[in-house]
Amino acid sequence: MMTRVLLVGGGLTSAVTGALLRRELPHIELILWDKARGAGGRMSTSRSPYDATCTADLGAQYISATPEYAKLHSSYYEELINAGVLIPLSSKVLGMRTSDEGTKHYVTPNGISSIVKHFIKEANVTPKFDHHVRSIDLDNGKWNVRTLGGEADFFDAVVLTMPVPQIFGLTGTVKDIIEKDDKLRAGLQSVDYSSRYALALFFEEDVNVSLEDEAAAQYISSDPVLRFVAVDNKKRGLDKMKPSVVLHTSVPFGKAHVEKTPDQVKPLLINHVKEAFPNWPEPKYVKCQKWRFSQVTSAYPGLPGYVALADGLIAGGDGFTHSNMDGCIESAKSLAAAVVQISFNHLMTAIVMTLHSLEVLNWTPSVKRRTFGKEFGEGREDSDTKSKMLKMATHPTYLCASTN
Image (cartoon, rainbow, N blue to C red; front, side):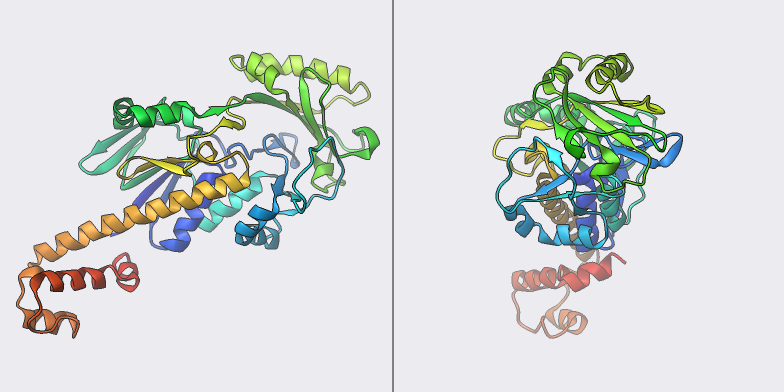
């Protein structure tokens, strides 16, 4: 009997969780739903509607691996480097804050979303996008999950990886659980995020778009609106690609305009960019992205990696660790371990029910010995026999066979 697991969210935590589960439990049935139109979450890469090869990273800009996490997560970094997903950051970034000695920075030639897509592929799951989860109800031992579009399905386990405040927008049993548990509710409410806007500019070929000192990116400290700017193709080592630029606003600007729509903020940002960079040509296309939940400013108490809302219903993500790739990996490791335990418990229950239905535990010792082998000899106490039977039944070899 395969365990059905729903991953809610199309970002890095969900993708890595899926990949780890596929490696630990090859026969598990994985389903991924996300409300967005594509994979990435806050590792989002946008494409020009006029040229799909002209891309820009709207969220995370590069990956920084401290010596501690480079060692702890060496297998993940090596996997991504060997797959060509990550390459060393070789271009100049002005104003970058000082990192721990030995920290290595990486960029993604195919866009930052390629990290997420890599792990989704490893998970061997086909995501369903435009699936905005509305409610989660416990129904006869299964989790009944419904979307705003009316689709519904049943799962043995549900893994929530959306920003924590969005969990409070869910209805059904999950809402009742949170409302009745003061400690859990307080912990979830303590998770907070900064907000900001991102602006992507896509240009035609053979135009000059540059920053001072031939830099590929720059942190800005003296501007009331802009905090970061990058000639994105140059930052990712793609000098021959049509130019694209990404700008991130300051947190105060994002907070002041968080209730506005991207269409309302877009003209403000375009005018400010023209003032700040008067020599840049007119872009062919402009996209404005609002990150209501940009980076975690206050994480769940104790940084547990995940929390169990109920048996088979768990929540994780950078809100339970910290906002970078390593934080997402740490959460994914915790989530995957929790789902493995849920799957184990689910299978144990099925095995015990099967044994009882066959009245195996009431067989005579000689029949048990003939059926299960020398482990079950004559004269064993029933409790001891039962214990050994369950140990054999839950041996990894049996578990894999039972899910085929």
